[in-house]
Length: 296
Image 1 (cartoon, rainbow, N blue to C red):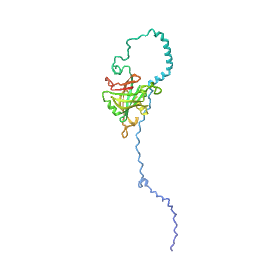
Image 2 (image 1 turned 60 degrees about the horizontal axis):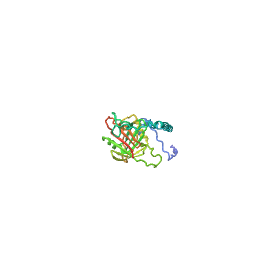
Image 3 (image 1 turned 90 degrees about the vertical axis):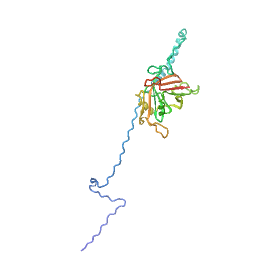
């Protein structure tokens, strides 16, 4: 006798839920299933060379000026009192010698007589640095000591690479001229120091190259001075990742930062003229580079 069973209805499946994929035993161990690839790891970026800490000191002349300014009024009073006390003594003893010895007399040249080491008599020793990226403008920095903040930072309208080529000549003379302000043009006329003038007309070996601008040192400038604080004289190249990329004409790279450092003899002719004569480290007579500041 045949029996018929009633079929049981299957549970409805949700159209939003996909059926579970059965797990195949041993798939992970045997590698039968596809294994997702790991995301590619990028190589670590090369670390940027850290900039050195700035340990430059203030110029010694600034310290002396600050100490002298605090006592200037007291010294003026003492000088006036001493002048009145000495008047009766100076009157009968007043003489006019026929020959007044002058310091540096008998020497030749504008810088005065030179010693055996080439040092100009009566001049003060300073440190001068010419630096800049090869396709950027060259900068002149003057320091009283290699470890002090520059007292002068002047940017010339000439590329560093071209200026270094000019240095190949026998003598290189840089003349910087500025105009005197007329009397009464403003407050403080006549009190501006020569090296504090902001704008100069620059000449190289008699050829006008444009203008030179005095500016305050930037972080990149101080970094260069800090890296060269132990260098007394020499030339070389500094890495761009430390001193910055620099600025160059549009479409060109600034290139590496080149520098040349040497000792300079500073000769003060008057309040309107100063000269800097580079001392040749080879000991030859005559400077290879002369820089003249003239206010006319």
